[in-house]
Length: 244
Image (cartoon, rainbow, N blue to C red; front, side):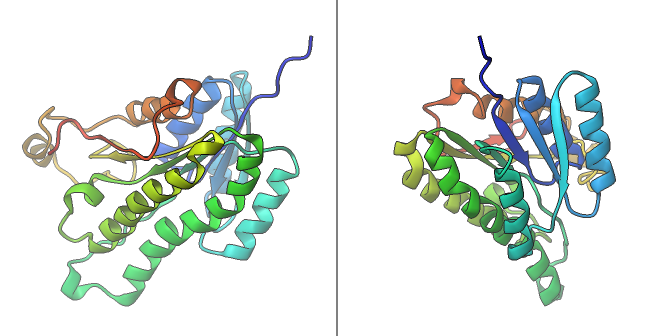
């Protein structure tokens, strides 16, 4: 008896600390994981190799999510191999500065990756996902989009816009078996957060008195990507150790 093909999952920014944890979780759940990178293709390839060595299915791909034509070309090549039914929009960058001193380029770069990148990746995958009548779109945002943060007006604006997009897109595709949710991590112990917060800062800001772990966020993403989350959509789910 033929076994059904595994669901295919694309994780943008999959070569970074949080993205890698998400890739490992989805692979552990039996999905074929497509690990996206921009400039760190070697890291994505190494992660794919480790997943395959552990018995999973994975491949690496590189493209710039801010380049619409290059993104569409890469996605079309991936779709030629089969449907992509799980999309984790994890790509994002920081370029922090207090707003009076923020340069136009700092604003534009952060918006381009987090928000325009969301459109460039998600829009071409939506109709193919609809045709399968099942899908999961999970947008990784930030506590900064919920609470705000000094020096991150650009980042907060980009991730806050993703919250609005999450809710609106969820309404469009809910009847097609597709859920759309956002996961808003707080202070997570990854390369992006390294050096940004001292132990004293974390103890003051986080009721649990510690930074979160990438694997803890990945567990939430894995649940939202599963059949068990069929009735959860349009939600912004914080994972932040109790930050208000």
